[in-house]
Image (cartoon, rainbow, N blue to C red; front, side, top):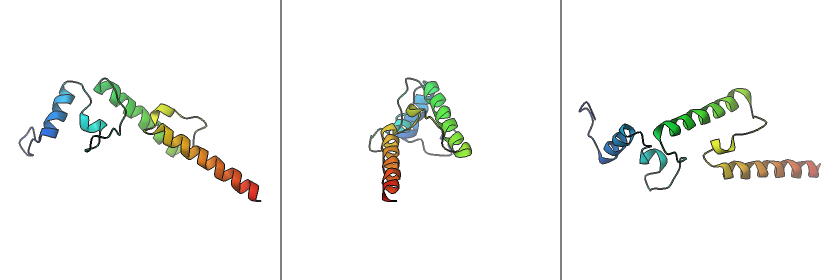
Length: 99
């Protein structure tokens, strides 16, 4: 859009303005309907640092298998992870009890 190759929409203009001001663009933290889907950070630098840390955690998990401990705040939905872990333990215990 800056080069004139794409139309500068209001959303793109807001995103560019936020980046220029070192703020996290609204569309990076919220869905189009306004629901929050990302973590909140006071500055773009902190948000991006957190993004890199989260990526490192996920990449390590993929490369080295499941870790013995988690950086819980590094998940987009920590409650969802805890629920999944409880379900996994319950299923394992139920299978063990059936034998």
